[in-house]
Figure (cartoon, rainbow over the protein chains, first blue to last red):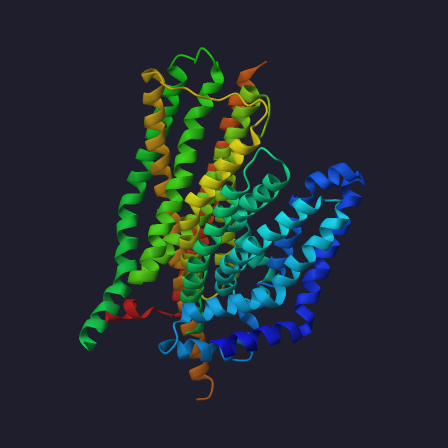
Length: 221
Length: 254
Length: 54
């Protein structure tokens, strides 16, 4: 399992600079926002957390379809499914999700504070947004794994995966954004939405790999 | 052991045929009753007195409420069918799931449309990001996702499994989405939305609503059975095409 | 404010939607039936149909 994790992280970093493209996409989305909204610093600071969240959401959906497709192309997916008698397949999927998150989504979380500067956000709000992203993005990856597994046999499933996953991640977006807002505006407590976000993440960590494993088994035979 | 699987396969083969026979016999009756009940319900609705607050727009309710009910009912039906596909591998379950998706999407779209038309004179706006409206909208998006998935995959076996998994993941998510959207909504305090709270609906309005709801539900079943029949025929055509191709292939070398 | 317009619009939209859906399904059925008839005319039979005859 550890070997699989390390292998996947290495592949994810090496293969066509997937992580870099994700961060670039994130940067592009955030950089374009002021042109659409106007350079008003106060307004940007106010919508900053929401923009960061939407950017991170789109950027992390971007690479999701490659989660199983690369393995399917070189045949190692069949090996993983064959080996499911020894290792539980959902666990394997879980590890693959973690590796994908480390390789291509964690850079987004790291980049978020820098982009927060561009959006003229206060240090506290920036920190809170990065923290919510850290807790929320795994949920996107886990539930996205189910979508990616369902569409794995499609040659061009990328857009479809995003369309399938987007309605399911709305709760994550809601709690993530409201937690980061609650941190910067005083009266609202930060903890309840943040804990809800964590609970969602843990819940999806169970549901996503399970569903993905069932889907992968179906796609292989 | 072998015998049970063979007999099981035989019933699997026979099942759709028997289903088609049954549908052929009952469908005209079902359709007639459905149309009759629906028109009766709507006519009763028009005969009923107007609501003192909402005037004649209350008549939109006889469409809107049944549509909203069917949009949820259809998703539950699809979830049950998804379980049937995954657990019992019932051959009709996956046909039911695939056939229900476009119908459910249509009813959900109509629920949103009629709600929007109702909201314009009542609330003064076509759309509010109200908790219930937003949830139904998300439900509509999920229907479209399932629709896109079933249309994107050619192999019926594979697409059945994929759609079933997606439906089940969706059904697990619906309560979460509902809860989070409501939470989000109270957080944002909608500025000036008049609440449509009729704590007690007068019986003169309730009866037509009930009749038309049953009528529309039967219409839904009629359409669903028709769509299932078309889907079974579609699969038969595919099988027959394959057999024809195989026969031609066998004949060619000889 | 004329409410009747909205009521009519709602009924028109619903009728259009449902009739459209019904027609689409009916056309789908008709097409499939025609395809089956065509294939049967060339002499392709399903396994179950052949068994019933023989």
